[in-house]
Length: 200
Image 1 (cartoon, rainbow, N blue to C red):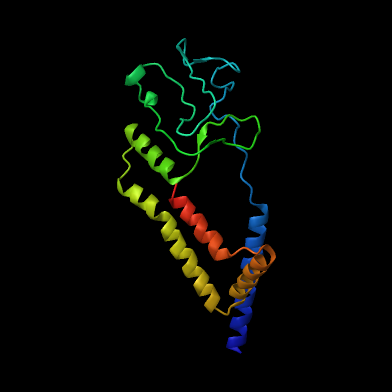
Image 2: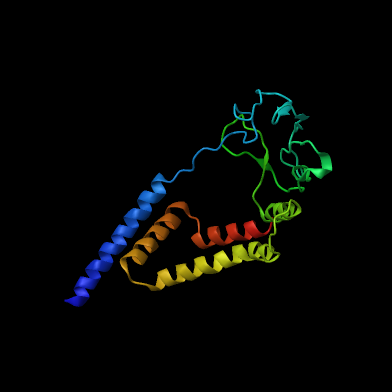
């Protein structure tokens, strides 16, 4: 009797978790970000398309405008008053890959660096240059993250392949259906994606 009751509870729990996961994944959506996060706004006191930014009472300075984006370029970086003495004028690092936008608007400026291993490490050093006390162990954790994720994912997949609970069976059926319909291998997709993350 206890065994049947525990099976029913496990089945109900697995069903509830499966439904929750399906509902969560079908309704998850990122809020739209502004197409130009450094763009003008009423609060900053800047007129649209102005080449001069006005701070507090009457101080003003020129803002750099960026042209076409190429490999190794920098994201949009304004120049602030105070020259080299102003920490905000710390030169941005050279990034690799294509520049991206903050949103999906076709008119957005390409002013954000691509997220890849090199750029993460470069911006970490840039933040150190600006005064943040980031431990050197952070870089090692970033470099090891794809392999650590691979280990956790494939350990979970192997455990799911061995288990006979309803959730594991449902997940195996979903993966088999995915691989059958698309002709793609889940292991290859996950493994190769993690390889790409760590190699750029």
